[in-house]
Structures are given as C-alpha cells and as structure tokens.
Image 1: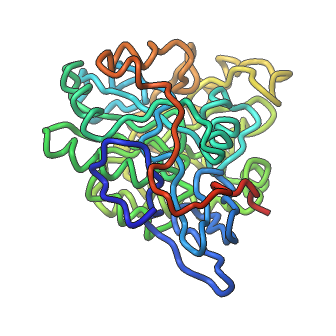
Image 2: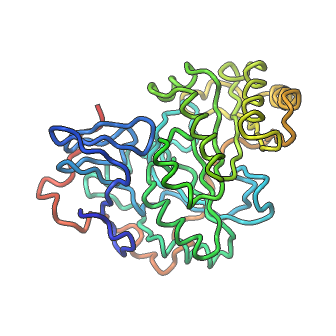
Length: 353
C-alpha cells in the first residue's frame, strides 16, 4: 500500500489525500470536518479510511455502489448547462447519519465497507478511465458524484474529475458540505458545480445527525466554494416538525442572498418518510410554498419547489453491468488489496471510537 499510482487497473488501497501523522502511530484525517484521529487498525467515522501502521488509506477507491444517467436538473441543478445529461455515480460512506436517509445502505455503507476491510467484498471496482469511457459511451456531458458523500472518496473523485475535464466533461459535486477548507481547496479546481444541502440554521438540528457539526462549518464551506469559483446551488429538504419553521426558512433564504447572491438558486424539496423518520408524514404542499414565499420575501430570484420529489436517490438505477458489459464477469469478484504489506492479519476492523 505505497503512495497510489492512481491510474491502476486493479483494486488497491489508496493513501488518503490529507492526513497528519500523530504520536504513537495515530493519524488525523483532513478530509471532512470530523477530523478523525484514528489509531492503527481503526477506521474513521465514515468507515472508509483505515490506519495501517501510521498511514491512512481509503478503502473505497474505485468502488461503485450505484450509477445512472439523467438530466442535470435532477441533482438538482438548474443554472448550469440546463438540458444536458450527467452520469451519476456513488460509492459508500458518509460523514453524517441522517435519520431520514433514503440511501441508507449506500450512503452509510456499513456492510459494504466492513466487507472491504475484511478483504471479502464483491462490490464493483471501476477505474477512472473506465468511468470516463462509460460516460462517453452514454453520450453525457458531465459526471455527478452523488448518492454517497463525495468527500469520503475524494481521491477517486479527483482522479475522475481530472480525466473528465480532459475529455470535455463537466463535474458536479452533490454534498452535505461538512468538508475541511483544505480538502475543498484541493478539489475545487476540478469541480464545476456544487449542489449542497443547507439542512437548517440550528446547531441542534445538525447535532442530531452529526454530534460534532455546527451550522457555521457547513455555511463556511459553501461560501468558500463560491469564492473559489465553483458554481453553487443549495437545497433544503423540509421535514415537518424538524426544520419547517417559516422564520428559519426565511433566514436560510437571506443567507443565500447575502453570501451567494440574489440570483443563486435555492431548491426546496419535499420530505418523504424513511428510516428513523418513517413516522413523519410527507411535507405538506402549503409548507413548501410557504418557504417559497419566504424566499421571495428575502429577495431571492431563483427559487424552485419540488412537490413530487425529494432526494436524489439510487433506488431504480440500472445494474452496473449495463454500463460495463465488458467487465460483467469481473465486476463482482472478491476485492482484496493487491499490495502485500498488510500481513496475514489483513486490515484490522476496529471502528472509530
């Protein structure tokens, strides 16, 4: 598991892009705002990065959970190359634990990442070059990193994005924006569009899904992306009884206007019951349109309401074999790191504590 060659044709652990060695062999990850400090054999909160003998590695490089083709408007993105098609891809792992997550098995990906750590995974491995070729064969104009949190597999996102730009494809980064400033600066030259959640303006709301998260961290990352020249669009999924206060929604709209501009798109999406929030009814239409009125009162000019759809989910996608027919027999073979430095004990499974 040496420094990654990047353009490889087999599954292998790849060194985490941002890491800081600590005393006693522990490592601090610099990708998301958790900044996990993990010891040998431990994995961070996202479960996708493991410390092996004082070096942090990404387990999920090139591992695809889902893939689909659709309009860029479905991300949702309205003000960047409208009418074009994107190839949407996701892996496993997330820095949040949202109670209403619709992509639970993908976004959290606990079972899949455990299997990767044990060297027993049969998830699909796709090289960056293969993904770009699939995008060209599908005749899309861009690639979107979605379904799971892109910061978790930033190494792959960067490699794919670099090749995408060389091939004339744009890139879309769909995120919770719980990312460090240094990681954002690292990936920014390779990303054309950020579609980010603003879930709430209350720290207590964010604490329910991420105990260390603060609203200021998310908003700071979104504003930095805008300052770095990335086209930014934001969205708020309104959950009845959780973040549907009209005054708070007005203040979100005011923040967007003040920090991103009055023309910056704000997408208001409907909540649908899922997971721990299965007991909550879908968002009433009057709440969604009430938020629209608040946005207009705040001075936003580009406000979009999604009364029939909620998240950008991966429930009805074609199987990966449909996009990589030449690899049909290889896609789901057991994935073991091709390097030999782990020893007989393999990659230890202790999780973040």
